[in-house]
Length: 219
Image 1 (cartoon, one colour):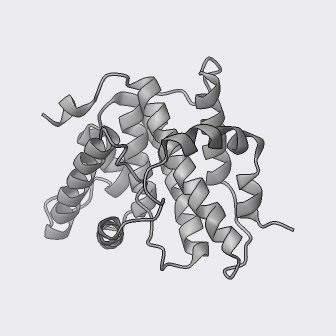
Image 2: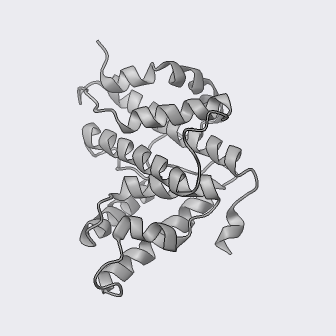
């Protein structure tokens, strides 16, 4: 009997989509050391300012806005992550805003990188699979929210086949409570495959919705 992660990998949409993400795959799908440090730093600061979103959901949220609108207006998305706050100029809040702005700029650069250098911001491989899987679901939830806030109708039936399938998969991943065995290597492999599928799917959505580079929005 396969676990929830393994079953998701055998989802009819994922099986079809793996053909295009494997062709474009770069690297080994592992979270790099710099990204791990960034995840921990962002997550800690968000907790300190009382945000209801963690680092994974926040990054997914930013990626969704970038895909839908081509850029993320800070005045639009800051309040959704950390609210207006009683002390808007408090040192911790200012530090968090600065870090989130850096995260946005880094993400925009990565999503437009010629070598597909974009990766969802998720916990490192040393974190228990259960927590990483939950973070992956949170990332997907944030991504869908970001798409909506950016003005994209995720229920639009006129989307190209692969785009519509990917968004349905993202919705499924965001709502799944995974049941797995930490010692099962197949669960780890399934997690890595789904994470890579998400990575390439986001770039597919970006290409479909923003065919002209959005790097000009950094200027």
